[in-house]
Picture (cartoon, rainbow, N blue to C red):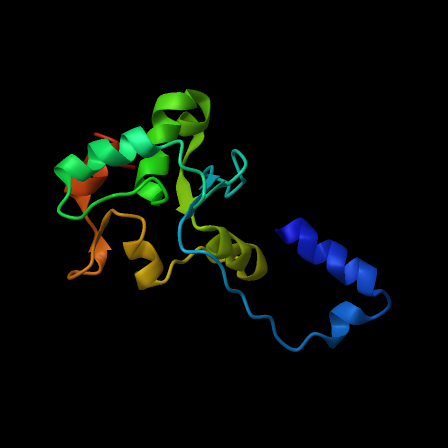
Length: 142
């Protein structure tokens, strides 16, 4: 995404970058951008339409109070743990695609509450991560 932004500015030519007054970022809710401790991308993003984590979604749904579908990030995390051990070992931060773009633009990795709820691991009432739900993905949350 960030590469595409830079290319668009380069294509605009001249002083295009200096004429920008503001940037709006919007994006899909579900997805997984896996980042290491240095906030570097570990692997290509798994987008909402990637449903190869259907088995993990069904498993999580049995233990959580809300159904988890394969597009939710929680199922993608469990899939990553099971299928890409090297990437899982490096995982330190999780971002949604548009949150990663905001990180690149601002240097701060944050997530809006309604987006966080779509991951499947948020206690919506308390507006904090649900440790017991997170343990279903990783017995030793980081």
